[in-house]
Length: 524
Image 1 (cartoon, rainbow, N blue to C red):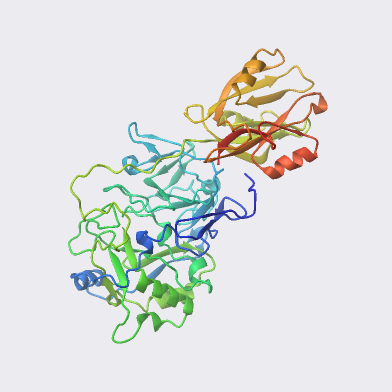
Image 2 (image 1 turned 120 degrees about the horizontal axis):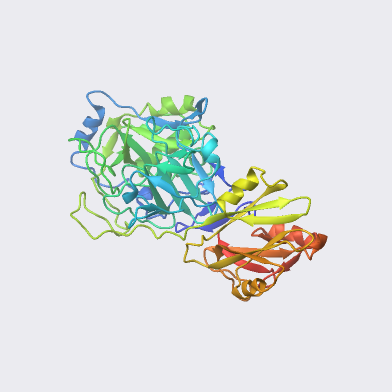
């Protein structure tokens, strides 16, 4: 898909914006306008500066110190040599990114799964680049390199059109099967504060989202941002149960903190402000966020490792020594399970008794990717969602057809969304051609026309209103006709207004509903 503008934005519940980079998919592009992810009442964005200290705070800190003195460490940075990286990369996609099914090890606690049958659904908008290109997945290696036994291999995806977050744990693309594998996966609507069902994991052991807890360069090193505005993700070597806002346990080590526990940097230590130990103003800003919003225990790992984004602009010669100036004893443990007075509802006790299950997020209808090809000798266009046909044309088994780079989403035939799209083949003209229509009347008419061979229904699309308007969650698909140039009719279908304008300038005629000629409405 080519975007309608260089940047798109939608308002979130905090009043900030979600930004789309000019080119999608993109790795690590700023998407939040230097604003926290999720609404203001979300647990990641809660001000804990006045929250009470847990009665066992000193004991928990002593457990972390483990007989010594634990120092903070920034678990992020840039390139580490070869394909290796420091920190957590994330992908930014838009609504046109095809949704893919993922096979899960923990399918009963993952989104994008029919939990009645255990069948994975096309749900995750994973960029194709993540299969073969480095630096899209935690650790750095491409998805087709199996490192599941060596690292967590998180893959984080932000849909900038839908303000949605998709996160996967322990991913691997199995080339032989042509499918993604993962340990678990989770979907988060970043316009709402919805916890995972109790007992469920996410892509993180605590059942929390990862992206909103990352230290991001566009916040920390942006001098226009005075307050980072959210807590940070932290790991400890062992945990014991879970408390709000976590939903999942990953250990039962006596004396250890539970998942979801909050640590807060003290305002003063021995009469001095610990945030002022570093002279770097940007690192001080990070430390100030630790005083106001704290750290949330989200996974088992190295003690006091703070998670941030992979970004080649980080300077670890500044970060590492500055973070090392803080130790575990500079922190208090906030009262376990603490919630602000305006916390979102659905707040469980530490380990609740059996409760009615909370339904997972409503999953959008499954989609398929429709790919466009061009035959230069005829100046004809052809589109298909059939993986076999795409493979044949990509391999050149029918010479002359090449991808245009254009694609859009549609609903599969198995979906209940939309109406079936009929496909016809014409071989009685000067040149062979294909035609597609979602209109039952047009489909019936052409089935009676001997010039056309009905090839069946191939996908589903929604119909627009009489004025060409499309419903929520869909975008217009424009249809253009070549006016029989070259002795053979041909139609082109696009969601891109710029492509539409270029075709009209070349003599093509718009067809369809409304003034712009909308043929159908497709997911977007």
